[in-house]
Each structure stands twice: as structure tokens, then as C-alpha cells.
Length: 97
Image 1 (cartoon, rainbow, N blue to C red):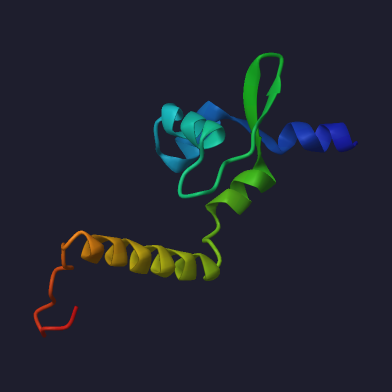
Image 2 (cartoon, rainbow, N blue to C red; image 1 turned 30 degrees about the vertical axis):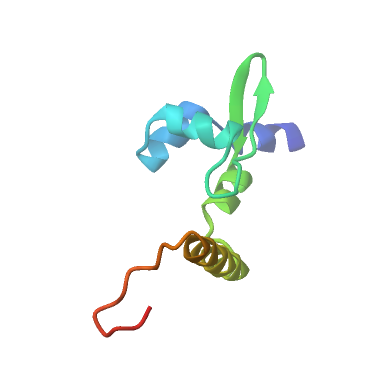
């Protein structure tokens, strides 16, 4: 019975692409190299690549808030590096950086 469930819980890359309304090359790229630090898990059966439905659902979930902390730290480091080169950040309308 588990094998029957696995057959119903997997999608081809074309099926995933049509569900998400994106090109199949986009899905293929997500499985190989990922996007924004996340990779879509996939597996091969007989030379055809599949994505498990639970893996797709998890991939489409928003990231945890802790990633925004990483982004803000990365942004601060980038700003410091730009300042070390003598390049200031653009000023906002209210005069704050």
C-alpha cells in the first residue's frame, strides 16, 4: 500500500511547472542549484526526475524569520565594506542613512 501512495505523491517536473505556472527549466534549476539558499528535493526513476508532493509543499512554505536576521547582517557588512572603499550608502529623503 505504501508504494501506491508514493505513486500518487510524486510529480514530474512538467507537472510541477504547470501547477506553479512557471517554465519547466525553472523547476529543473530549483532542483539542481536551488533558489535563495533552498533546493527543491527531487529523485530519478528510470531516467525521469520527480518531486515528492510533501517536498514541494515544504519548499513553497515561507522561510523562517531567522533568515531575515542573516540578510540584515549581510547588508550591514556590505555597507561597512562600501564605506571602507569610500562609497557611502544612498541617503533617504528624511536625511537618515
